[in-house]
Image (cartoon, rainbow over all chains, first blue to last red; front, side):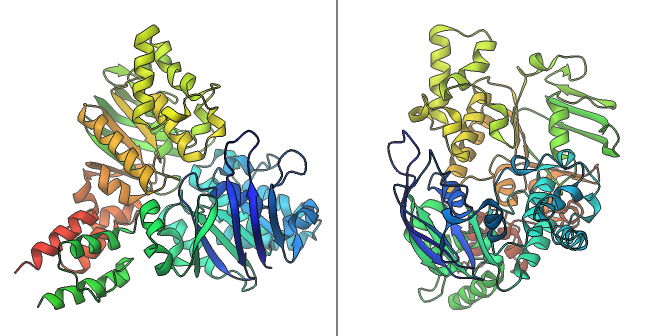
Length: 284
Length: 267
């Protein structure tokens, strides 16, 4: 399902400037997109618009523009239609627990049960989501007794159990240990081809493993759109979000005059291995 | 300054979370506690600041036992910045939030104003002094939480995932505040999943796995011995991973990697 953010201008009441200021982009069905954003760029507000939590129908409305999901204005969806179209996982997992569940299993079943799905399907969806988020051993635990990283996995699993057309995740791996992160990334890569995945990140590295397209949000608008390399080379991206450790090391070698002009600066260990050897060979 | 002696802890109706943990930290130390999700890192922080008390063993904070000293008195010795800043913020303005701790210490008038102003300046919050904390974005809110703790000038500072959600510029600001604190003698304990941040900040790593302490080593020793990092379920920083693959001297940070590479290829 496609998601279009069209000329969106949004200001919180009483704020001197809009948070989102002409934000425009279109994401096609099945795309895997990372939106990179420095602090204060409007990341969480944009996420709330994409998730359908804004506008709230009364107090908080767009000054201009809006969001369209699957060709329809996001405002035309009922809550249950929207829950199937878009699922959103924010940064503070404890805030989005239902509060109605005594176990992790019940928490994951809460959404599908509210869709009035047959019992067997609820069970199948919950089992699959538990496996995807490395949670099987915690299925019987009270969600509120879990650690921060475990709660983050529970909230992502709850969203996956809804099998939405569009999944929006705000810094999904920031609190995960490497094993859980790699397990989640492997499952994100294996999501159905038609499921649209949008991840919002403040760090460069986490989304490199699965996103195919990168957008840079700066001052409430999209200022760069392309491959990882295009966007991470963009001067605003370097100025606001820095660079990866490997590219930073290569840049210091370049600044010392020892990096061949024609050799691309690598981003990660894998391309770094090749590039650093080439740079060494060039020195003779 | 901080001593943890044979500490064991279990939550009611749950298995042992921490089993026979012993380590010490001195003034100016920057210690990172690492391990998998659920390894007991945040529980250990809550034991250090006295919010939890151990079933057995003892914890000394600047000479005070966490079992016999009330939490509000311990707070003069140990300050905590929790994972979710909104859980520790309750005043109507940023200025009031930062002033709250020093007021409890008895500061008034100009002393209070000077201390609050200095913290607002250090945390880059001067322009937000009159804002309601919950109107701020998550990253700014984290600096409010940090500032409210710094204003107490605790000799020991605990931080749970302080870099999480911060962009590159904010991480530079956080790192410089922490380095400044350490050079003033503050003992800093970080719980952290971001190994690049650990490599850049910590001089020692305490690794937990299945409730046990599996390593207490200098940061370079910890990451350079792959088995310790593997036992704790953490990955080594990219700079070190590439240095190892290129058979260079160990390097924890991008600057160190560039340095050892240039040295190896100097002609």
